[in-house]
Image 1 (cartoon, rainbow, N blue to C red):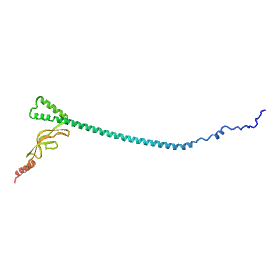
Image 2 (image 1 turned 60 degrees about the vertical axis):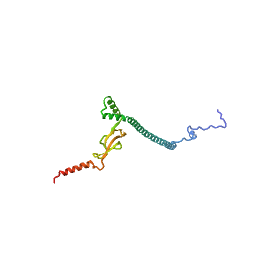
Image 3 (image 1 turned 90 degrees about the horizontal axis):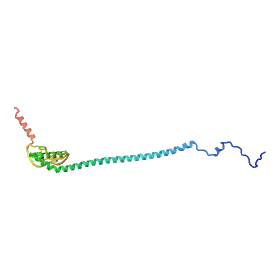
Image 4 (image 1 turned 135 degrees about the vertical axis):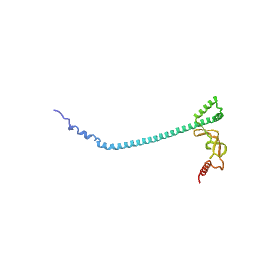
Amino acid sequence: MTEETPGFEEEPDVPSGTGSDEAEPKAATPSDKEEAAPAGDVQQTAALTAQLDQVRTALGERTADLQRLQAEYQNYRRRVERDRVAVKEVAVAGLLSELLPVLDDIGRAREHGELVGGFKSVAESVETVVAKLGLQQFGKEGEPFDPTIHEALMHSYAPDVTETTCVAILQPGYRIGERTIRPARVAVAEPQPGAAPAAAKEEKADDEESGGTEEV
């Protein structure tokens, strides 16, 4: 026979799985997470968009800087090349200017038939070298006088010219490209004051000849 302890009653058995659900707090339902997620996604998207705009702005500024630097570099190269060519032309012109008296002596010797023997070979070599450097001689008898390339040392009147004309070349002129190193020194002749132009004289003579042969 068993003895029961006085004052204590046995608790009734509780079915498993019923009390634990009531004791634990309810977890967040999937619908609550779905409601909170869109707000975070929008903020993250806005932040990424702002960063992308900043990157695009920075890229545009750097691209503009690069294009400006390239343009400045191209201008610098053209300016340096232009200055280099100008310096070279000035240097060559200075050297050839010193050789002009030698070329004048060679020209006079050729006119007098003294350009013979070894002197002729040396003279021709000098003329070949200066021609390779771009030196060009100009000035011919009978061409119109041009004050930009001719220097008149003698002046006279002639009945057979219709404009101021170079009738003698005292010293030839020289140029390099468009740069005149020395103007041609010439003697010029102008039409005689009051003289009828040669063309008018010829026309008058033609009229007289045709009138003289006309039958009455």
